[in-house]
Length: 152
Image 1 (cartoon, rainbow, N blue to C red):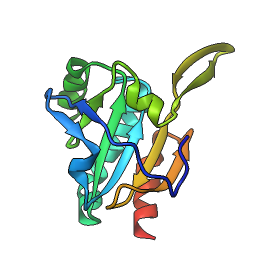
Image 2: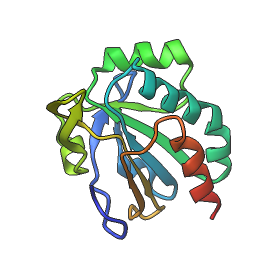
Image 3: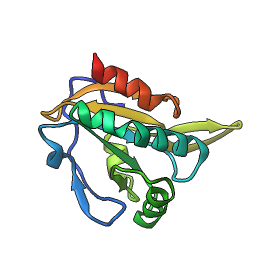
């Protein structure tokens, strides 16, 4: 995981509509960049829907929300449409951004060890500096937690 106080690595990835999005295009805004394991799974759906419900409040605070997983653009499009998600979902099938943000790690699930995305959320300030880094967040609680951090 990257530490608070470090410059967030810039990136260019396609969103759910195939449009290339870069971190630098959000300069001047706070960015909640969250990494999640997989579209349409229980925890990831709870997290995305809660971010969606709170999205107007994030906007009021001058923040944008961006989700990143290794799912395809087509998978992200289905996820967005099924749940009416109002923010970009970026496809990192090559895991380049996932690795540059240090969220690709060894995980244990039901006693089995495998590599995967550790659910991690970064708050990046208007100048591209990470001001908060939260690892192994609880999917359902993370959006409200981030809103509280923004209010501080």
